[in-house]
Image 1: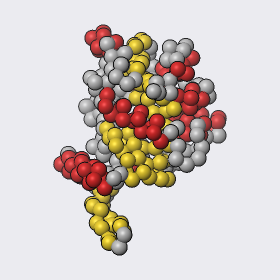
Image 2 (image 1 turned 90 degrees about the vertical axis):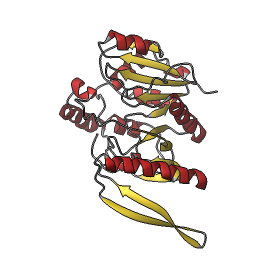
Image 3 (image 1 turned 180 degrees about the horizontal axis):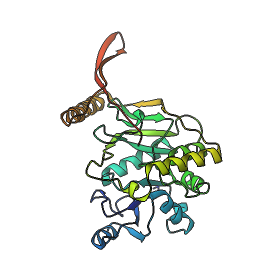
Image 4 (image 1 turned 45 degrees about the horizontal axis):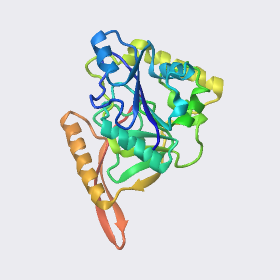
Length: 288
């Protein structure tokens, strides 16, 4: 059975699901950058905890270099933002899918009710997973040896912006190695209540400037609109259930004030019959 690790850099305002704890199919390593001792004590009961200020990726690099994480002893590592409330069951499903399809990197789909950086990250009710050109930086699940390969190149100079394009350049080339898992959908919060934690660490303008410097230094590329390059279709019965769930998400979004760009009725051919597959709501997306 493969060994699995969830790495989180968490602060005082984290939104981690209470069920995310070590011992139920994976280990949890938390780097705590906050100040609230009550929050720290709660997190310490979930898994191994280390106190260290800084962003998720610099903290992961520090854990790797000091061998606190001991990444070489694992088969797969989920590098999770602390505002994504994935449950224990959802995390296990992500690990199972990555292992089954032997993926280099995978990620959950992101519900339209939250922040969506790229259209490919929004869920599809018709597929179990989609092979894509990019896995986002929020919750990438790596084959451990691939993550180690990237961390041996990564120098800690980027806190978030551009890290996903960096590991895309460094790691597995070729089709069907990166995927969005449509069976697991989570909300990437909009943070309407206040400033994002990463903004407290480093401004958006500075993160972009750092990425442009690293991109020029290493000759990295950035696609403005990464594409889907392949699909694994769901069974028809599961696709119907997923469609109804996705329709419920869309209704909730519209009730909350979301504005669709357009409604489009799509069709597909099945045998000799033409079947309506449903209303597709296309929503505006912007940079993370």
